[in-house]
Image (cartoon, rainbow, N blue to C red; front, side, top):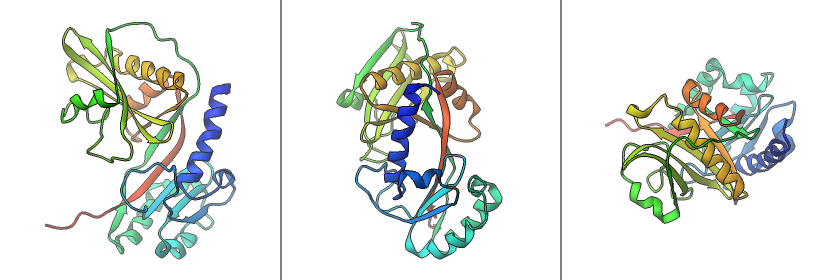
Length: 255
């Protein structure tokens, strides 16, 4: 485990303790932990208002933050279950049935990565960099749903940096990062279909990861459990899987 990973991991424990209203030791406890939902200053925020339920595991126990109305059920639900197994389908289904009573359902699980080692990046394609307000010109372009999201998704986590690979005047791919919490930059990547399988995703993500670290911030990467291609990009760029998280979302009203 590299020195940089140790530093990032300790900072992750601090950040997750803010996000899940617990203390860092709770995240590595033997037993599962249930806390009450709070909007702590400095937390990552992906939807307005207090979360109804969020849960996280580092592979051992699970910490769940929820509305008070769920506390009694959750204490029963987590009892005598090994923490990471709470993310198994059969257990999430039981939780989902309880959430429906309150107009919520479980969202997808997110597999999250931190940098663990350096990767040498050789120049393969011409690139252009954009920062802060320079990114505005790309909003509304449906080709880049993963690289940039602000202001459509959540105005409290604005896009900070974008790097694009170009073929003449044509964009081949874009990597971008949003500041989900102070100094925590989440990376997203989009490569246009006609330019895939050329290493452009790995190239751009590696460049952006290194840029974020040079700035003194922490890059992190998230992807769906079945998105093997995205996970391989993360691993090829020097990331490793560290935690898994999910949350409850409101049920869509019937029309």
